[in-house]
Image (tube, rainbow, N blue to C red; front, side):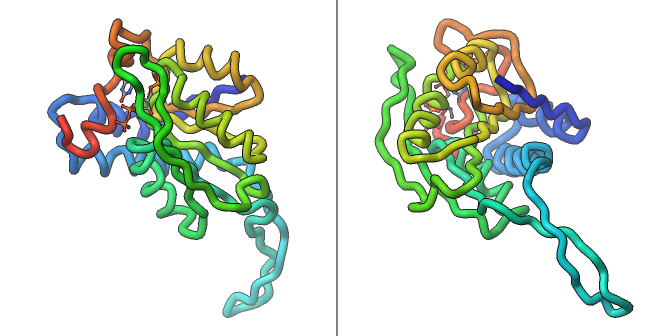
Length: 208
Ligand code: PRP
Ligand code: URA
């Protein structure tokens, strides 16, 4: 499995503030959006281009524009929504899918409660978005749901990953490229990433 670590100084600086427990929901959302946007710059480096010509005010210019498959951003609810908001600022015409999952607090297994995807998901380049890859159960189930509907070559973008989550994706979906801003030490006994940033959904929406 290929792992791309986005260690750009701007991303690392913003991530430091994101982790800080003093950062409230408004700033947390803004930082997560910005980090996702900067990560997308790296995650989308291999998008196809084609040559065309435009007329500048001076002369014709040979230019490159995006070509090939259209894009889809798929958020794992709830926390993936902030990453969608950030990336849509770069790619406003991308279609958006939603996969509703929550982690059972006892078993840590994901429970599915919603799924709505663009109907032509099999024809699109798909970016699966969730800021936290902890046990990897949620992302693994989301990747299976996408594959069942014909999606191929899905890239998983997570702001923080635990080694356990990366191992789970490597085992269940070895063809997946994972793009992360940091790989942390481990999970604690409640399945939270250490040092991590806490519960992403709660910090985004102020629900705790
Ligand atoms: C969080 C997070 C991931 C999941 C990661 O969601 O946003 O979806 O946990 O954990 P895993 O890798 O062990 O599956 P949560 O279940 O808290 O739901 P929420 O976003 O609705 O709060
Ligand atoms: N989900 C979160 O939001 N945070 C973690 O550390 C683990 C799972």
